[in-house]
Length: 596
Image (cartoon, rainbow, N blue to C red):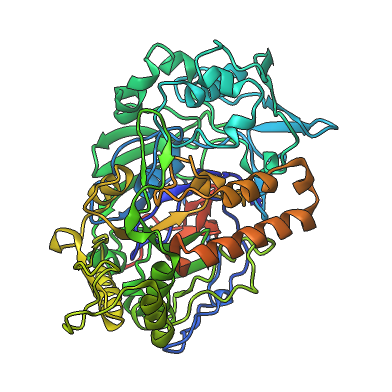
């Protein structure tokens, strides 16, 4: 089982209809089992082994053919088509076809030698050397070089880079902090030996170098003349992006559709498909589109699973996702100019309030009733798709209304005027503004369910602006720390590196809750320290960190998820792992037209 496309990248996800967290940039992917999908019993968790991970079609491939891919979304994709800059899952779904990582990985998301580059780790484990294989070329025919990978690091570390990839692991590279501060023109720890060879040296040995090293080059000759702070808005990123993946972009209809054609010069050989046609499909018509043969493959919105499983022309694939849903508390703000996060919002500083809000929720019922058993209670913020590091001993917050009320009483939140709603400890009206995303049939009842659950313990929670918000505007509010948002319902694609610091370090850009905790930062640092090469030590560190997050409740983990994909029965060779499609290069079709 090999992951031809490795996903190390965190991404913000759509809540209620997501199935593909991301591929080639947000997880990995793989294969196995072709067991027949069995119907889940109502009101119970679905067994992952019920779902095959690879299409069972073994028919004769037709030569070429075009696969129709449905990007399930109620909003346009943003169009930031580059791994260094993109943030949301819809853009990833476009990226996966035309660009990829230099390094492949095994079924445990550990780098191996199956990708476009080989690597060697030094004896002291501080330096990793990559050698790009022959005939790895960008879509314009230029070779992918060691300088292209160096350029990616120079962009991410640049003082004017405002994207989310400059994280604690980047800062561990020798000379990176000096470069980021504008004190050096180069990164001392990155050396280009020749056109194909590059070495990256870290200040100390770091176990995540084999799961979290940045593996995505940037085409220096194509992009290098553009100022770093102008790259994200450039035509080279938005309108005419170039990668070195199995397909080239032929045409983009911004936010709506993309036509891909086979990259005949692909380093693994010409893809089996002549092309891919990607288009936005509204979640509410996803099943109808699959039934009619309008799309060959798409995510399967969980609110349509019961209808879709009755279709005879599709096969449903599924894996446990590298992701979790959560309710986040806005605890402070991040200065966009300095990158400094401060936990200075007094509203939710008392953890007893946060714990009470967690005890108010019955996420088991949510998973069973709203998601047909395809979601199950999230107990920690490390999903079970990382079996080594997910701490099963932490049971999470199960519904306990009396305990919730007691915590609120102790914290001073009491109903003074007997209207059924609690005032704050100073006797003032206490209202909580809740932001949640639109999308699919589940979004609204889910938000209402949580609001009613909090009302049951005496808390007045109202939707921001009285409505749900679409994906892009929702995350704009969250990223910019809009003061009208107190709490929000969201989801993370964790990426395939078990190190959670890209989301959770106090100064990480993706730390949307703005939680600043010295002990958390200390444990996160230990998790990528030289000592963490000893697996038992790293497990112990991450277990302690999960226990800390559980106690402090900066977020309420709500649901883990099964990622479901639906493939037309003419599709062959498509496989998934961790919710991600593996190797689009190997996918083919066995009929000229989709089955209906």
